[in-house]
Length: 343
Image 1 (tube, rainbow, N blue to C red):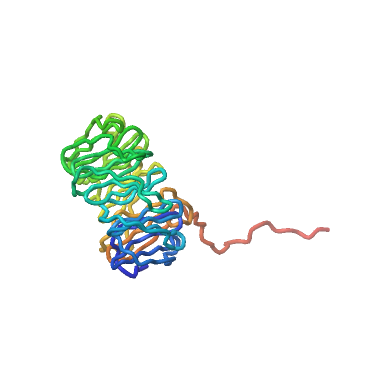
Image 2: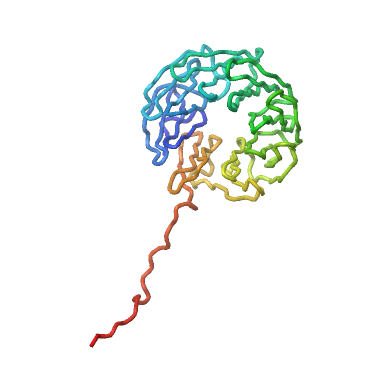
């Protein structure tokens, strides 16, 4: 289907809907299974929304909005005073926002009241954020900062070579890739570097499960490294340039690319599983990366949604889960056996 306006930010998806911020101060919620519009509101944003417990949180240029995810009814709005620097995140019972120049805010989801704010030292460099339980990790320029959720106190700051990509976490480690062609594994408690691994290009990002970190770099290679010590388990050359960090779930690593827009690999061995081939009318389109992928695949359910920069959205089902029956064929002979008249 075609959106009323081109997108202004990457979309997000939950079990019921796809949510898209559009240019010209518009926002739309689409039915995930049919693509039909369920509701729309007039609000502008250049950041993906956050959906949690039936509420959609949206960061505008100087305000934070909360909407009922089912109806689009506005629940509250609170001023930020300045623009956001990163996508919103959720930490236990608070919405975490990073606002310019570099302040972290914890906001109460019930009414939008600010619980605390913490400055990171006065920097307007690009920033990304990830939350793990009560720990908030922010990559800003070449610094990785841990902030505690309870009071906003800075636990530690670590300066690393190059400019850092979005961090990821797994158990006792936090991982940060860099334009220095390295990925660094740091101890969550004190920020010490446990190990680093040299890549063949800038590190675009990573994904983790319990014991493995999957790293995509701009030399078009996807690697699996052991979480504890950085030993390489496998590497796989990609047929497309990575467009976003990988995702890992259910024994699969999904790699968003430019063309094709998505390829998947066996998380244990790195063996290719499948490549998504765009429908013909979208083969030359520019995709708004990353593609939306349902972490749990269900029979007959839309599990993949792709959005183009000109505002075309497509929803896809997993054909391997449709349980298609063998087509009907005419009978060559009548079934059964001939019967004789009884005496």
